[in-house]
Length: 260
Ligand code: ZN
Ligand code: FE
Image 1 (tube, protein in one colour):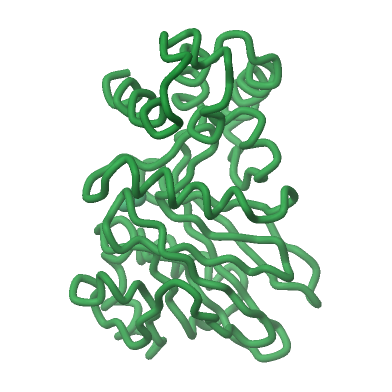
Image 2 (cartoon, rainbow, N blue to C red):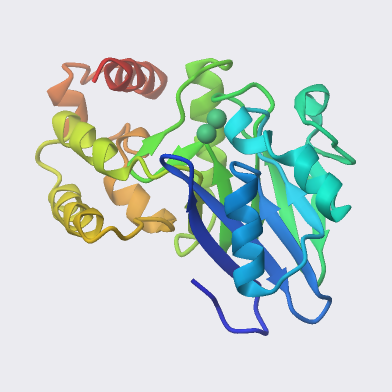
């Protein structure tokens, strides 16, 4: 998918089993970034299709399906690698260490960096505020959130709250196509959410046609993502936690999802 040339151009493509690759391009400055490096071959093929030359890697976290292609791409292109300060020792080839509040300047565009621990303890996300685009890695998924491999439920809940403060129209690029399974789970905890029911049916059609369900938007997530809907009486009644704290509800839903 390409957006017109005066704006930040993005190109999304599938990688591995269920990852997405993302290229960003500034035509004027002739800069190209890949968000994470899930699959060197797929990324190099995408670069060739667009006739773009890789200049930057923007890593979200250290997992192999996000940083595993760093060194090979750096060797092939001489690109610069930016990634999370808190995981710098695990990000191969890192040149620029980023953390909360940093602005990563990519040509004419600026990404504000947020620390979003939970999935990993140093995970970061990139928010291009003026473009209303964000790359959220494995922190937030369509109707879901990342598994807690290194962080606590409290950390993840706090991370998701940062994302929820962004403008509703923000387009969220998640790193995996987990949407169908997430929708099925979401319906089990919030069975009377009409927006969720409608979206789940749409997602089934989109996936049956082999199309991506990414990017999503923050407004759509607020309506359908159970991890952003801890206030929902339907959810609280369904899991029998009507009087519990938001954090306890979050923890419960995350545990139920792990077992789903
Ligand atoms: Zn991951
Ligand atoms: Fe991942």
